[in-house]
Amino acid sequence: MGEKQRKLLVLYASQTGNALDAAERIGREAERRGCPASILSTDQFHPSSLPHEEAIVFVVSTTGQGDSPDSFKEFWRFLLQRNLGNSWLQRLRFAVFGLGDSGYQKYNFVAKKLDKRLLDLGATTIIEKGLGDDQHPSGYEATLDPWMMSLWGALYQINPKYFPKGPDVVIPQDELIDQPKYRILYHKQETLEPALMVESDIIERVREMSPGKLSKDKSKPDCFLKMTKNEVLTKAGSTKDVRHFEFQFVSSSIKYEVGDVVELLPSQDSSAIDAFIERCDLDPESFITVHPRETESNGSFGEVITHVPIKLKTFVELTMDVTSASPRRYFFEVMSFYATAEHEKERLQYFATPEGRDDLYNYNQKERRSVLEVLEDFPSVQMPFEWLVQLVPSLKPRAFSISSSPLAHPAQVHLTVSVVSWITPYKRPRKGLCSTWLASLTPEQGINIPVWFHKGSLPAPPQSVPLILVGPGTGCAPFRGFIAERAVQAETSPTAPVMFFFGCRNEDTDFLYRDFWESHAREGGMLSVVKGGGFYTAFSRDQPKKVYVQHKIREMRKEVWDLLCDGAAVYVAGSSTKMPCDVMSALEEIVMEETGGSKEMASRWLKALEKTGRYNVEAWS
Image (cartoon, rainbow, N blue to C red):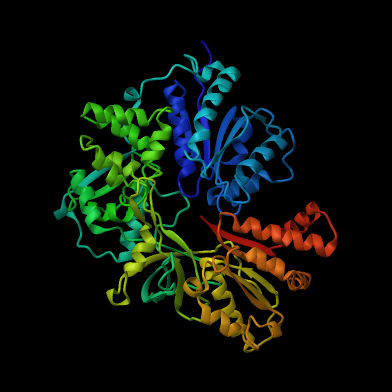
């Protein structure tokens, strides 16, 4: 008897679902070549089992400023143990594929550090790590496709048992479209209890059933907020629409700190939801429960049985993003199986191939086509609801930096939000789902908004620590909270100075919270020079040569250096494009000038600030 068929283990760490999507794609492509695959999140696999595995493919994303996904944190902590020797993983062969965004300073940081640590522990690479980049015209798949082809060849060289027929023999797609992973049960309405569930319970029940739920997500909202103010901050003539929103807690309130983040679950356009339900020939009034198929034959998942039936329309509204998110490549592959018009089938099959990848990207992601728009473009496709539940992107809460202070604004939450809109390459107008919805709300509507509170990347500073704050545009949001809080603290006890650098395009149209900053910059105010701080503005378009916050930082080099020497913490918030790097470069120059040291020394000096919690960045794309 020969050695039994090898199974490929794929471990993923995902924050938003992209790494899960890539891991499932690797698993599907392995199975199309005759190699069964097991796909697990890093929080479902105990790292102590690593030495017993022959080969593992890791798919890990990097979030924000080099942060690892929540599901990876314990796994990583285990790998950092000092008692694991340099031969602990000598039997393991591995490959790492990272998902990142080269617009951020610490591009694919998690993949790089995992790759290095596994090598340090004695493991051997199957192939060089792959680094997918969100900034690439075709996204991370541009790297993933060729990387997978190399992976299959290398795995076959290691052990032909992975691919009994060879790594190039591929089962046709039509033969491999399996059953969907989820099963929908329909329930008779008359057998149901009266609808006594409160709103938070409904959201929890529905989102618990959603396939898009990542393992560590909290389904039940922390609380609900009600809008009390919707004010436009930008003036006529601005290219942006930036709003100041104020909310009050409904029933229970949550304790938060300055620098924290709140996530809001947006509402989708009801007419678009109705159009989706009609297009898919679904009954909006039917009651359903959603169950993973894999749990049917194993009784260990008791919670599956306890799901309370939910109205189908409610399930779609609260869990399936049919109006703003673009479907993934696999959606088109499955659509091709259900297309009855030949020309539609051919186009969908082409989209699912490596050759069609760029055309799919131009049609789908670049145009930000929604699921509803895609389904309307291929009218002959009638996908079963089970597949739609599995493949439609999940409706995700949107995160915003809180711009209030619980000390200065008790029982309130303030947000500073840029209402997102843009024109696609094919001149189609698009709008951000959450920001547009928020901008459309009025306090009179009294809508309850489900929210979750989180720690962000900006820890609340002690009042004894001097601050250098850099927040152009809506990056000023968390610092409004910082300064409001410190002003309240200053009424009863001494506080350290605060220096704030703000930037925007035009002084007349884009100067967010002008009165607030200027009142604190006046004599004796929190940002006053008298108190050792300062308020400095950069209006990039108000003169022929553009001026940005980093230029102002260089101008104030002496004051910045003095504050750094006094133990100041640096906080940077705003767009992830170039600004955080440019600010870091400006500070590096100041350190070099003031110490007479090299660029490397200045870089190490600032990295030491980071390590001690005195250099914090929160950036978004």
